[in-house]
Amino acid sequence: MNYKINLNILRDRAYKIACEHGFHDKELSNEHCFCLVISELMEAVEADRKSRHFDKEKYKIGEYTECQGWLTNEEKFINVFNRYIKDTIEDELADAVIRLFDLAGLRNISLEIATKEIGDCIDDMAESCKDETFTESIYAISTLPVRYDGLYDFHTTINDMVLSIFGLAKHLEIDLLWHIEQKMKYNKLRNKMHGKKY
Picture 1 (cartoon, one colour):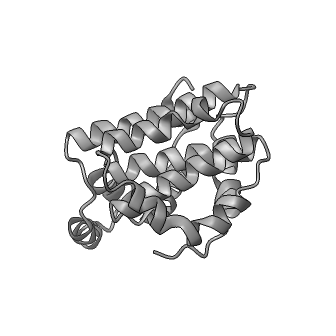
Picture 2 (picture 1 turned 90 degrees about the vertical axis):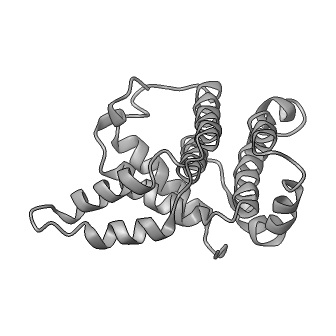
């Protein structure tokens, strides 16, 4: 996995897509945004409980066979995404990071710390997950905002949550950057608010 990417570029894209889809039409609290991040992490737990993992080989076959001439490239992408990626552990972890990118964009928070440290400390972060169950790792990430409250600033909390999810993904041998790219492409094609209330 290539960690040479500038996470601020992904932050800006995620925030732009969220704005274009109506997610920031009204003012939202940090607690509201963190709750949505945590909801994505809980969806990752549900995916794990159901053993819903991304299967790269099935995905490649699906991409190859999705060749009906009457569908647009966008429709083909959506079909393959829905069949092989949506609602998997990988997809839900990507969603959680995208929500954090969006929150960082909303509050104009730089992800410079996460960008610099991701290449240096990702192996250590992955190693820290080896003695934890998936749910314990998700719990640790989910509780960072509460555990950091009063100790670290908001900026540090966002950066550490992003790094922690990348560390867990590395431990699980998930190409999280690829999944984030796929999910942002998918989100760009969705309707306003993705058909949800918030």
